[in-house]
Image (cartoon, rainbow, N blue to C red; front, side, top):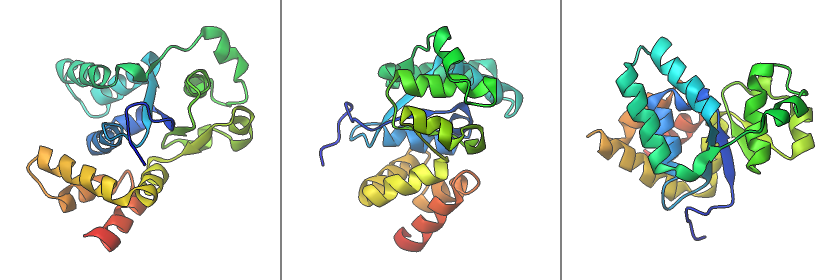
Length: 189
């Protein structure tokens, strides 16, 4: 398979998977050439990410702005503009604060939503629009099963970027993606 930035498989990354640095880093590395999927997000998703980084992780405004800017520069095609009327059309999402995520997936023709809050996205609702919903753990396991060596190479690149080894990166991902980490530890360490 040839991997390119024009990869047809697309995933909306919810704010909750963009907050933990190790998880965000791996998800975005998987979207870099050779890309395993196309990442998507909206301005509202990035705003929610920024708020969580500031309030929950106590990152400085400069650090948050830098991260946001880096993401936008690295993936300019990831930004999805959600028409306000579409938010009204996705009332099958029980929490109105999550409707914008499905709306982004619909407008961008995404295959999946990657979120830690899967219960907020009922399958019956998503099925109407042909969108899947996966935890980051399930998404990473799926990517690994499709292209194991490429995922391992990207884990190694991530480790090299912080002068560490694969085991360190896997350990830093355990809270966000325990099944993926267990699988990598069992089969590739």
